[in-house]
Each structure stands twice: as C-alpha cells, then as structure tokens.
Image (cartoon, rainbow, N blue to C red; front, side, top):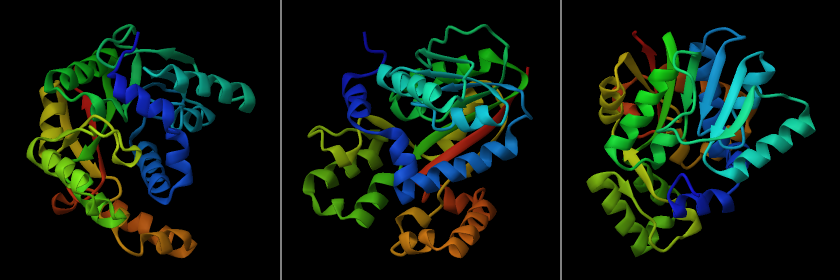
Length: 274
C-alpha cells in the first residue's frame, strides 16, 4: 500500500533523486548548500538524527560518516532498497532504514537531537498534512532539538521555465499560473520535466507553518538564491574559484528577505522549545 499519492510514487520510482543531487549543477548546488547549513546548525556527533523523507540517503550517509546516528525513513520502497544496497556496498552503516510516513511516525517521543524534513513538505499539498508532519517532528525531538524543513519556492516553476525553455509550452504556462495562484503544483500530462504533485511555499508561509507547529524562533534560509536560474551559472559552477566565491556569497545573502522567493528551495531552521 502506497503511503503517498500514486503519481508522486511513480515520479520517484522513475527518477533518480540521488543522481539529481549529484549529477546536475543545480542539484549539486542544492545538496552542497544544504550540507553547509546542516554543518552550521546540527548538534555535534554522535547526536541522533532522523532523516524523514530522506530518499536513498543522499544526506544520511555523509552524516553517518561524521559519526551521527542516522535513522533513514522514506515512503518509497525503491529508495529504501537503494539505501540498503549502498550501505552494503560502501560499508557505511545507518542506525536504521525503514518505510514510513512523515505524518505518522513510529518513533518514541523525545529521542531525536535533530529531525530533517528535506522532502516531505513538498508533497503534502494540504495545510493540515504539513502541520501533522511538523508536529510529529516536534514530538520525536528532545527539548532543544533542531528541525530542518525544506520547501520549494512559490515562484520556482516560473523562474525554471524561463531559464530552461519550458515556458515555451502553453501547457507549462498553465501549470505556472496555477502555482502562482494557489501553490498547488500539478502535472496533468505527467511530463517528466515538469515535476509531480507538490506544494510551493511563500517564505512567510513556511515560517508561519513551522511556528504554528509549536517551534520557537524560525530562520528561513535561501538555498540557491537567484544563482540557479541565471544564464552563466553553469560556467561559474564549473570554475573552482568562482564556485568557492559563489558559495560564500550565497551564505552571506541567505537570510535576505528580498532573495528568499527567488531561490528554488528554502530551509526553515527551528528549535523545539519544550
């Protein structure tokens, strides 16, 4: 029985999520910026981390090599099979690899030092479901534990379409119109380049949801800033000197309110108060 919508599961069975975050320039930028933020805010190893919706472990395995006790949870069995195979081939052990739903975690309360929600809020299109996932993250966290919640920007499809040429397609422009109006992203023609059923946040909306779930001060950080959709991003990324400087600049502007919506992804960082 699927724990997520059929079209979402089909998308991830047919797409190589871990390769997206390693093989493409945009994906690599997203991954490295996410890892940089985690390195800044995570408690020191050997803290206990639950990576919920962590796919095949693109973040879980590097954290495990740093000495963290990482539990990987994902609703897609293919991802779990890939994670188990990688663990066997690499010799990098995770604390556990299990199938689960971010809204209903089979985890004891108050045992996690940190919870990663770096995917679930994308695909929980209803506000109530997103709050359930955030409440569950809070439940399993210790007092003072950290939650890291990723979201896709409300404006990502418009910017992506203009930078890739997808905007030429009238059907894609209809998708963009719906995204901007409601945040409800749909891909009725199942075009492989147009993503799958998802919810796209405004920055202030992400902050509000994390606060509504009972967390304290919430920091909203831009992952890619505006760099990901610019004409010469690929050229800059391939040059080591430019790449190094770009990473510094993106860290410097990650809290800038006027930048947040232009970033493809945002991360909310918050601490459990009690």
